[in-house]
Image 1 (spheres, rainbow, N blue to C red):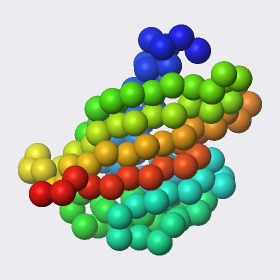
Image 2 (cartoon, one colour):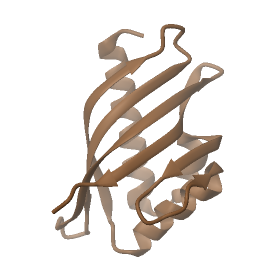
Image 3 (cartoon, rainbow, N blue to C red):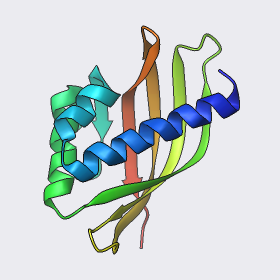
Length: 129
């Protein structure tokens, strides 16, 4: 996949993430964007496995007052065979009034299933302040 096409696809996935997250639909977010056997490594949580684990972490964030997560892709690439994509992205968690709650970064691996890619492993941490 060409770099411009890959970046556009990643930005599209992040827009979908934001749409579902703002709506509070973390179940659909996990089912639409993550593999069934995905893992999420989030600060303050045990390693979460599968879509229910991902949805649970995101629901807890939502319940803690995170209205949206804003993203800025820093770097990305793909395996030679096109089966995996990696992405390094900065994020900002914001309240509904736009106040920043947390700033950090994450590293994600997306896995190709059929003709589509899904988040397979996500590890994120907040910046120190």
